[in-house]
Image 1: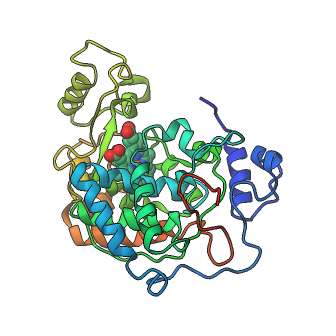
Image 2: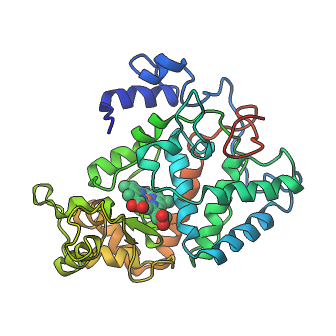
Length: 348
Ligand code: HEM
């Protein structure tokens, strides 16, 4: 897999957030200064609650109805949509670039190896089609994704909350942006904090947002590192680790975790329920990925894990605040960006 030197990543990110001139960033060399995202030339309006109140008053109902429909087809849908929103925001901002397909000229974020396990893009395309019928050319794909993620949390039993809107869509998507920005399951807290900082998020956001792993699935390949003695990231609950290993290898038939292409649940206590059991699992040594378990192992994040495990309101309040913060990162508003007609293409 392509590796990008940390310095190059910093130079590219500096370009994206407007702090650098792009020198040293290979994507700048290839595509010009505004390569990863359009840098606003003038101050643009912030997101607003109720942004579509007059231009598309039925929007939240349409999104709710479509997400509900797809959850009835597949109870795992909320986890997929929530993860899509995170991956959109973390790579080049919440401007819908994760939804774009690659073109002949450009490999998109979607096709980065790290995006291979993203799923349910078609749900966003379906919601967009339903929204276009009532409000043509008004609502961005970036906002539809944000609304779908928020609705997903509520449908999975998590908090119901409003999100501010008014995002517009980007027109480009770079595979390298995803590779450079997405945190890895093998990371420990230091690396996770550094990775989230690139997306404008801090250590508190890291712990609160990781609570999203209370729902959803995880491929065995995302935690093979835990069985490598050299990496020293074993399961504190060794019996649980052994159970997962037996499952992932078909009881030893395929020692290479990748062969069977299996997946399990992030939170085996309540896989489809947005609750506090993710944090309880960390305390009892049953965090599935290194990036999860280390939140309990690290003394900086352990107090928050303990708090969220026992105080649902504290977790939900922190999660909402961090979701809103994440949703404001790198947005295009006002005269920036476009409203795509279809979420997978920037062609109008
Ligand atoms: C903090 C660093 C994070 C890392 C390293 C990370 C990594 C991962 C990985 C490796 C998977 C499993 C992919 C697979 O094997 O199929 C996953 C799944 C998931 N992630 Fe994260 N993630 C992080 C943060 C987040 C955040 C902030 C959110 C949302 C707010 C999120 C939401 C999800 C959800 C819901 C799933 C389950 C997806 C499904 O069911 O297919 N993650 N994450």
